[in-house]
Every structure is written in C-alpha cells, then in structure tokens.
Image (cartoon, rainbow, N blue to C red):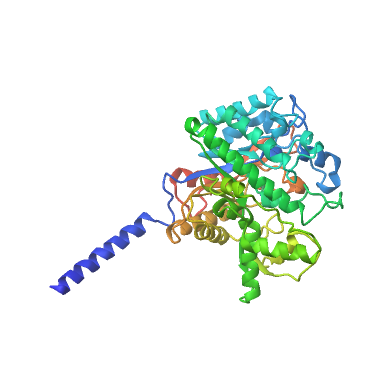
Length: 497
Ligand code: NOJ
C-alpha cells in the first residue's frame, strides 16, 4: 500500500517537474515580455537651435570645449528632430514593442521655467508620440537624460542646488499634463550615479578646479532623489487616477565581483554595489542611504577636518516621501567588473570614499568603450542582486548594448552579444525567479556617445553621418532582433544568414 502511494507520488512529482521546466523554456519569451530599444534627446535629435529651442548644458559644452569632446557636437546628430518618422519606420521594420526616448528640457522650456512653453517643442514630441502609437509602438519616456537648460545653469540651478528639485518637478508636471494621456511608462531621471560622479563632462574639474569634489557628488545625488520622489508623489496625487501610468528612475549597475577570495575584495565588491546602486536604491526601498555610505563618508569627512559629514541627511518627512517612490525597478546594465580594495586616499571625493578599483580580464572581448568589455553573464547577476536586495520587485532592463567603432551593418558580434544576453535573462527568469518584464537594447541608432563623440557605435541602425540625409540602414543585428521579437525565441543561429 505504502509502496503504491510512494510510486504514485514519485510519478506525480516527475510529471510536475517536467511541466515546470516546460513552462520555463530557456529559449522562449512569453508574450507578456516586451522588447524595445532606446535613445536620448541630445544623442540623436540635432536641431539644437531650431524653432525656439535654447541651449542645454551639453550644447554649451560641446560647442565651447571641442577639445574635450572629440570635436563632436549634437548640433545635427542623427537629425531625428526632422527624421523622427524615419526612426519610427525603422522601429516598425524591426518590430519593436516599445521605444525609450527622452525629452529635451530646453526644447520644451527654453527659459527652463514652465511659465514659458515653446509650442514647437511640444509639437515635436506630440508628433513623435502619435507616430509611435500609430505604428503600435509604446512610448517609454525619460524626462531627464542629462541635458539641463543653460538658462537654469546660469542661475546656479543644477543638481548640486536644492533649487533644482522644484524646477524639475515643474518640468515633469508639465510633461505629464502634455503627454500623459498617451505615455504610461515614465523614467524620471537617467543614471544619476553617472552624472553625479562625473561621467565625461558635467562636473568639469579640468576646467573648474575649484569645484568641491567629495561634496558635490552627494549634493547632486541628494537632490536627484528628492526631485524624483516629489515627482512620483505629484503623479500619484494629480495624474494617477486619470492617466494610470507607472513611474521609476533608471539606475545603472554593472555586476561587481571580487577580484580574489580575500575578505577585502569581497567587501570591496559589495561596497561598490552599495555606493553605485544602493546610493539611490536604498533610499527608494528603505528610505535612507546605505549604512556603509553614512559611516565611511562621516569618518572620512572627520579625518579631512570637515565639521559635518559630506553626505547630506534626509529629514523624517523626506525619508517617508522617498521610501516606496517607484512602481518598479529600471536598470541599465552593460558588463561586469572585478573589484579590489584601493589604497586609502585622503583627498575628498566620492571615488576615494568608495575606495575600490575595478578591472576586466584580458580575455573578455573589447568594445568601443574601454570599460564596457563583453560579459553577458553580468546582467543575470545584476537582476538576481536586485531581486535579493530589494524585495523581488518587477524589473525592466532600460539599457543594455554592444558598441563597435565601425558601424558596419555586418555586425555579427552584436548579434552574439544580444543572443548571449537574452539567454542570461532567461536564466535569471527560469533559474533565479527574477521578475524581469522588459528588455531595452541600447541604442536604436548609432549616435553621439557624449564626450566620446561619434566613433562609438551602439546602434541596431546605422547612420551615415557623412551624408546630409543621415541615411538610416538596418544592421544585421536589427534583423536578428526582429526575428527574436517575432518568434519570441532566442535563435542560436543568425537567422539573417
Ligand atoms: C548610459 C547612458 O544612459 C547612455 O546615454 C549612453 O549612451 C550609454 N550608457 C552607453 O554609454
């Protein structure tokens, strides 16, 4: 009798196991998983001084300091200001389900303030959104992707100032009121870690050596968090019931692994996660900065004779406002880093507070960006890390991509990169139980890679920057991606061959 029950149970378990593996096929994505691609206004639009647009900080920087920008500006870029219909046609040809793009603040508000709206700028985004909707492509809008209006910069209103918080909220409010009837997915601010701790440009110590490093990074992060949270709360009160959209902030994390098994390296890798990602994710999830940041920065500040910690503090009301101010996590992730403890340096700076250094092994394939070598497993570990650290939230990958220097349409290495990455995302879903719902390839187009210029090509679509037409040509990777989206299946072979 017992034996019969045991056999029945064993058969039952075996069938159940087979069924569960069958529902989590490592090659197949369900129809609920969405595929898209992304861009940012300054990187693609051009039309830098047209129809009432004023200069952004990036217009000012690239035009005044070409020596720091590879002699490249975004004055014309991909000319998407005029060619947005061609962009949407390319997206349609690839079969994208959504498109992530950003709003140029100084195109909509040339004075920075929301009392003076530039109708031509509003029209541009209305037209783009309508074109997308007509093509059946969902818009995912980033409100701020690094291009602060110069009008505000002149007034000292930038991320190191508390004045920026309400200025940003007013811009976001306007964006919701103008576009929120059609836009249901919003990213408030893109990669604050990158611009607050000095992505090429923005805080220019080589031009302005007086900048108070070690202080400005944390002021910047602090105001980003307040601006994001205030925007989130405003949306809930004013728009959620009618527009029913969802909001987050795009944070970036490349997988940090210890270089060796030493305690110092293991601690260094985790410290780096917390300084880079926890800096923003902890306040969103717990209401405050990671303890290690509070301790390390307070101790270092004391050693450096500051009378208070360089890391600002949130009031109780602010903590309550920030905690839970997201509907899901959005993450940009490209690679991985092997992390080790760096020698202590008493010069105040975020980098010295973090006290780590990162390398990538020689055998990882190089890309056009030196610290973004190919490590497709990284994304799986990043997703798992977010799941385990922040209460298993829904996650959207809002950026991931591969760059080369040629922009050649025969981009087999990009195909391989996408294939490997998607495989790792399936592993994260099937093996690690991560709730990841979208993948955004960066970028739709070859474009201006900020101060690195046009020599770094991330696109699924090639742009001929030598032609006035900025001719768009789909690369092989675009056809490969199209096939994945159509069949919801990760083809092992390059279907375009
Ligand atoms: C991060 C930024 O959001 C994007 O603008 C940039 O082009 C990519 N990563 C690649 O570096």
